[in-house]
Every structure is written in structure tokens, then in C-alpha cells.
Image (cartoon, rainbow, N blue to C red; front, side, top):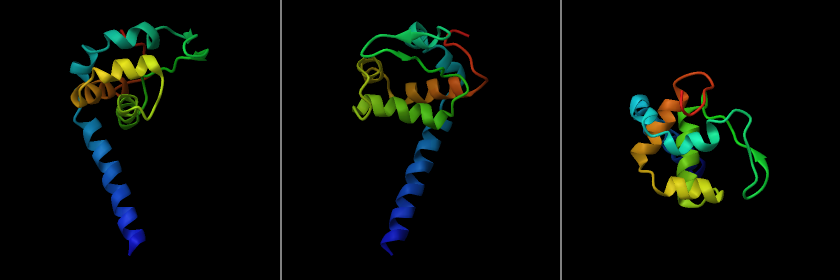
Length: 112
């Protein structure tokens, strides 16, 4: 019985994340990419803070993944300082809109 409760909880969690991402408006998300462009809009960009790493492309990612990642930065579950600061200022709708925009097509830079 406990296993069924765990499975049901996981299913509800996945469904809630998918619904939140599905409610995003790609056109509205396109208007909210200004803070994304500085890093994610530069092909092959690498940053040196807090350590050297390649900045990931956002275009073509799954909306649910992007929304969940933004929520994790906002909650502190993910720890990149710049992303945490940016996500702190985003509403759930902003996150859903951005996720919908970047998931809407092939790999693209933030400004296109």
C-alpha cells in the first residue's frame, strides 16, 4: 500500500510540473528573455563565475525541465548564484512562459 502512495505522489508531481509548463505562453516568454540573452544567447559562451563552465543552450529543451530548473534555482535547490538571483525575481507564470518559449522550437539563442 505504501508503494502505491509513493507512485501516486510521484505521478501527481510529474503531472503538476507538466501542467505548469503547459500553461506557459511562448509569445509572452519571448518578451521576458532579456536577462537570459546575456549568457544563454551567446553561442559557445563560457563563464568564469563561480567556476569555468559552458553555458547551456535553452532552445529545444523540454518545457517541464526548464520550469523545474528555474523553480530549483529560486528555492535554492540549485546553487548557481547568478541564476538564483535571476530566478528570485520570476513568478511561476514567468517561468512557465520562458519554458514554453524555449521549448517551442529548435535550438535557438535567447534573442531569436
